[in-house]
Length: 168
Image (cartoon, rainbow, N blue to C red; front, side):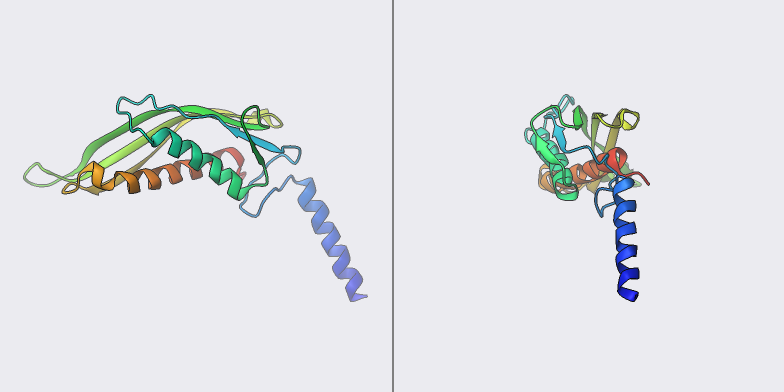
């Protein structure tokens, strides 16, 4: 009798999970009909052009969906589709010491994202996402740039993933 109860509970849970469109253990809520995702290349239209930023950001966004969902990555026209541009890549002092010198600098990257969800158009959006990385002023941007870009692009990809498919 106990085995039957366990089986019934498992079947009910399976039905509930499938009917809710729950897609992964990461909290992603993707329409069950969705099978593909496409991420267009994000060109850099910022005033300062960092040569590898477009490619790194685009690949980071593709990677988060490949790693955290079961969607197939396609070149274009995915059931979920992302496109946009990098609109800001800038540095500025953020912490000024008593002698008017910067103690820290901040690298900021902003991307404009257009997200289209073919199966749930109400969840589609167009908006900007921005993240930054602070670093000591006694270091040049070129000394920290690789680490800073990795950090910022991962945070941006996480923000975009959460905004587009995490329904909390």
